[in-house]
Amino acid sequence: MTRAAPGGLIVGDHAIHPFGIASAERLARALARAGVAPISRDPDAPPTTGTVVVARGDHVLDEGLVRALVARPGAVLVDDAGRAVAGHVAATEASALVAALAGAGAPPVGMDALDATTLASAHNQALRKRARPLLLALDGARRRDVEHRLYDASYKGVTDLVTKYVWPWPAYHATRACAALGLSPNLVTWVSLGFVIAALVLFRQGAFLPGLACAWAMCFLDTVDGKLARVTLTSSRFGNAFDHGIDLIHPPFWYLAWAAALEDAGLAGPWHDAIVALVVGGYVVGRLQEGLFLWLFRLELHVWRRLDSRFRLITARRNPNLLILSVAAVAGRPDLGFVAMAAWTALSLGFHFVRIAQALVARRAGIASWLDGPA
Image 1: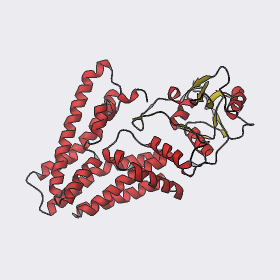
Image 2 (image 1 turned 30 degrees about the vertical axis):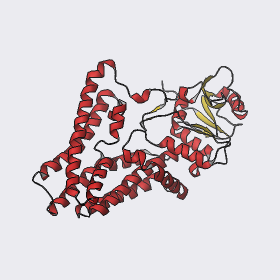
Image 3 (image 1 turned 120 degrees about the horizontal axis):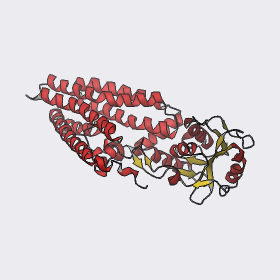
């Protein structure tokens, strides 16, 4: 039997509006995305039937905490001091929990009090990271500090070296600016698509440096749109498919355009066709390797062991490949950059084939991610 969706009740609010969104509204969005309906903000008029998720509106809760609470009737989320922050209770017990929340006290006797790391897993599979779920009181906090915490919580843990080490600071400010202007994540994605097309055209014309500028702009916006969607809780199925679809499809077309321009300029060597086949085919095989690992082990290839996560920093995906091409283009040898990218693609494929084979050997003992450990 399918359990009826719980209702929701948000108690209070706060003057701090991180990324331009009132804390109670942020919480209402998180609850709605977790299937909670209807949602009331009047403590004197809670839902009267079924179960109710009650939460303080002056706290920021990680979306994973909200989902875990919705899935666990009878649980009460407490902060590090043991004070009740939110809970999922029967409608008949909602008033007692509201009183505990309003008084910043312990949960009522008989309720299952859980802290953030007990209620929700520290392993965020969607963001490929291991971190304590965000639970933040807004009283006494500064808006900029809260926004930093929200932004950091939205950032992927296992990714390439450019995204991990270069983009965080500028992308944070771009995300704040987009939120302040009311720009949607999908609009940012549309702009990034424009840069995809511009880079493709410029690469084909042999304008490698201007094309790389457009390509890096696209890569930067590819970071911004996801962060904007997560910190404002405005991600959607369409936006997710649109963003990931662009990410999946465009790299081989950039490589083909680069290769064609080399041929037009007389910079194609005797093994040019084989190198192009390796670069483009290697991209496809690399994606198939990731899909195969996920299908075989129900686990992403890059999060099995710490070694795999570290290699993800430099594996032959778009951003590391663009680094190779950028260095070569600045040096005036775009042809050698393409050859180097092909060689790195072959090495990366070999590494991942070895890791898949090792995982098959280790399968009997069980395959789990190193991120499943404690935060």
